Image 1 (cartoon, rainbow, N blue to C red):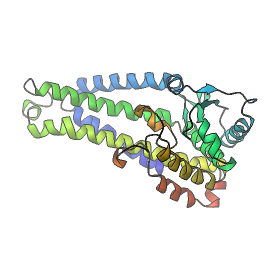
Image 2 (cartoon, rainbow, N blue to C red; image 1 turned 90 degrees about the vertical axis):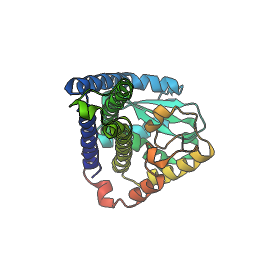
Image 3 (cartoon, rainbow, N blue to C red; image 1 turned 45 degrees about the vertical axis):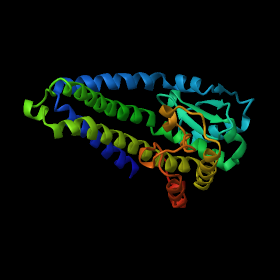
Image 4 (cartoon, rainbow, N blue to C red; image 1 turned 90 degrees about the horizontal axis):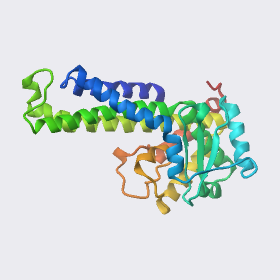
Length: 288
């Protein structure tokens, strides 16, 4: 269901791009799409190194963190994935994220805080969730969604600039100078694209929860971990860059004022509810 929802949202996002691009013609739309995808593909290719450096994550060896390696090794075997690189982030705020452009270049980073407050099954559930992001290639999906949304926003900025000089060239002069059409292009379309992009991110979180629970063959560990992490984020919010908030298992900015509508993460209560509702058959069923 989450895969179907993601597909539908990607179609909607593409339709928004086609709609706003029609005011500029094919050339304008193609230029904006190629430029935005180019920027985001660059981030997709190099973001793992950049984000790990941003949070001063240090690589750890099996000798330094034997239990961590043992859990990830077991989970990767269940998931049919190669062993990722493991990192520890020097902060007391409990959280974790996965990065890397594909399963062969994946990395999982956990904070010092998460290693202290979670028990074995809870930490295993978190690691399984992050491996699910790797298995589901969510970095690629997020990059494509960001590229399309970025193209929409670029076209909207071009329209705003052009409106100051007499109108927008597009399907015809009347539509290009229609105030209502300009309002839709400058305000409504970019907002809609942003919301769809965020909905895609939230849908991928639900999918990673379900997939991770199957990897761990236990939904309760992840459910309990999410509750603990949410409470900890309220008490000890992380000094995180908002542009990377979507990477973490729980929103690192949740200790601050943050509108749910514009959150990259679905409500923790709903995630826990869905995990608790998973049946034994779902957990132990054949994994694809």
